[in-house]
Image 1 (spheres, rainbow, N blue to C red):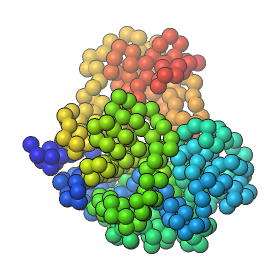
Image 2: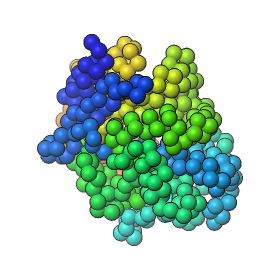
Image 3: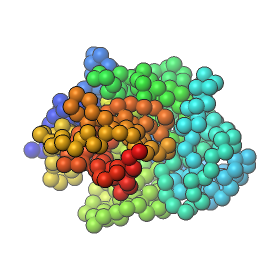
Image 4: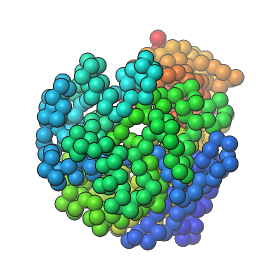
Length: 447
């Protein structure tokens, strides 16, 4: 079976399982190998997703912000080693450099909970400049000393967007349009704030989340209404694009249309090392995860996630290959991940494993004799989504989750072992033990 036929089949089957609703594109050496779209882009299932639909890219947007910073560097307006207080002297985070912000090594605190609370109190949707206000007024302590370690940080990229505005003298949206998107031939791509501005993009693949058994827009859901209040942010997300425009961007990068080879080499240098494996070394450059693979050469990629949104782009530099996947419905994280892996394996010509959702991997007839003993309240972490309580509902085990934004929702726990469970919303596992449960190497105590 050729790769296009395989991808069409995988996408269709994943859509039938509820694991994918969106568009994809695979190209090599400038030639499209496979592209397509499946599913619907509205809660009523009336508008089909098309290949020219624009999606909220979420964190796939970050390398565009990094590209804008490189253009400022070209103009001599900044140096990568400049302290950020050179441009924003009132923020109390001396020692954080532009490079630190680009590589998530600045240690800045998360702006989202504070800005969400402020937006509710002031009944407004703040602009991106609120991130500077947050850093000046919140009193939030640094997560760590600049350069001490890597910790993914949206705040840093919002600050970079403010830096682009300050040094260019243009609105961030206009700078991106005139200096990146239009020169690259990305005519449908823009930085957008549809909830703040009340202007919907043409051919928008609206993100949707599953709540109470049906798909709803995130801003109308109980747990995701913060999306509206945070819709004025820029830099860390909020680029809206299509698979066709992202293919044009790949070609523009290859041709050096927007960024020179020297500028791209700086961006792609894995300045921060991340956990790798026997297949190669992993690092983080400027808005790109950099994988130096023994088998595939240098691979640049980035994923994006926001309520109702799952996005990914992968560029295999040595093979001159690009793979783009844009998803507009919140799905089972296991199904989403296995779909991504199946499509990527097809793109590379590797062995393809079937798309598996959580229902495919759960134990069908579990021993429930200990389930009641695991019910109760548990410790929570205010800086991360946490299980607040485990309880029985209709003979099944459920969890009450408290998000880092302070929202609470119930979700079913799916047994995948005698004591091990997983979630639809998270591609992670918890294993019950004496006095609590273990998750990602940490032990959480039962209260």
